[in-house]
Image (cartoon, rainbow, N blue to C red):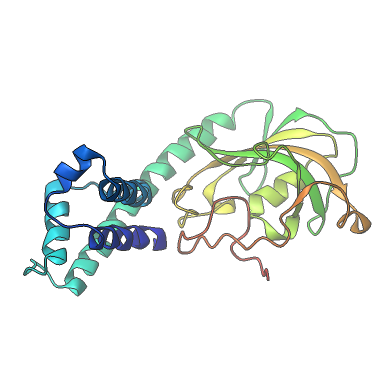
Length: 263
């Protein structure tokens, strides 16, 4: 939600750099102020796009102009913020309900496939390549390649973009991810299907993972990292990365556990 209000603040800041009149003409000319204003609009829209809110652009711009031109507005700032908070909460509730229904239907069908094993937590596990090495424990660090997607196929996290596997402590990630890795052996590859209860729940994460979203991870367990290996090798290390603060949707998405006690 913090990203959402930052977006609103950015939009008002943008207008402080340009005159309310004549923007259309400047935009046609492609001058510096118009380009800057357009860039602000893009950034603000990217924050607002994931909120589930729908806007009347005419009255949106009217509100902006009346504030910037110091005219009387329909509402006080407190009234406006209250309306925004209510609208945001309602939109998120609709997204949450939709995600829950779609996720439940998907997991029900997916769990019927013979190659998929469903654990007591609701995790669905599918072996792609069976490993032959050691299995990690709950407090181990693993070296992995992985890709995380939502049900619509959107990739929200991946080590493949960097081209390097990553060292990850299993006691600092979301529960379903830790459980799934402990079912694997070194050299193996698997798909993990996480219901929201062992992922990011009804808070979502980072403005990319919505509330009550089912997550799908494709994971390669390269190795279980021994203590003397933690400071060696070329793999990226996220052990010092901050947790994903999913309570306010302000952090980047990933696999970090919001409850983990990290520096």
